[in-house]
Image (cartoon, rainbow, N blue to C red):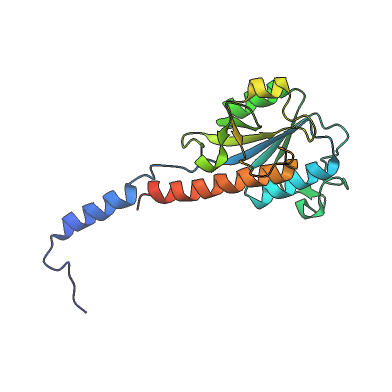
Length: 197
């Protein structure tokens, strides 16, 4: 075996290896979270939870939803998300939307992204996500979309381009899944661009 380093000063090589080992990772990929509020159908809440877990959602923040039982012994919570009386996901409840959003922005360091068809909404295909903040999705109600209060608390909005001539809305879990998938694709590509060896 040929030692390519035999003519190189070993002290210099050791220092270089040490510096490489100490080099920090420049970018930590943003995490994904979701606020669930103002969703009418329990089936949609269950599907949002399952989709969120499938797309790597780090936590769920619940406001209201009093008819839905989020405890580990509840039949409301999907079976794959509970195990032996334990909830396998992070769920935090809040008494008000303002309290929830303040927590998300201050403690989780996330931007609240509303999924809604409004003039200021950015097309999700343009990957309008931010590299310096976690992402917390807020999905609108099945029939009425995001409420005025919800919209006031969002940092920005994304929309999903549609090409048919029918209804402009999608099922809440379908809309959330499309946005989460696009976010993960963007995050994966951004991680490749920002990764330091």
